[in-house]
Image (cartoon, rainbow, N blue to C red):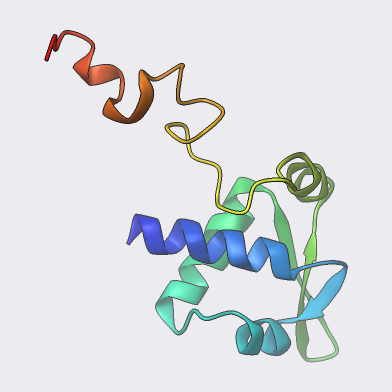
Amino acid sequence: MFGITRWGAWIILNQITDRIKMSDLRSKVPLYGASFDYAISALQMAGLIRVVKEGGEEYVELTDLGKSFKSWYASYPYPPVPWGPGLGWLYGGWRGWRHWWHWW
């Protein structure tokens, strides 16, 4: 579930440019039901998006933190992860920091 949520949140974040209706966002993103709701709430808890209710409609918009995060990772075609390119050297590459004692 964590991987699906991370990719779904990354897709949602890339679909939001200014302000978008929740129904339009649901139709653009390949997440359905609880996974969509979970990704939206994860982005809200991270402070990257805000959901605004106006006139019976729900709108999703980026916060200032979300705009800066999106521009910072604009060159990444995939969600940023601590073991991926860029920070992989810090965690010991693909094996991770837990395997530093392996000599094979």
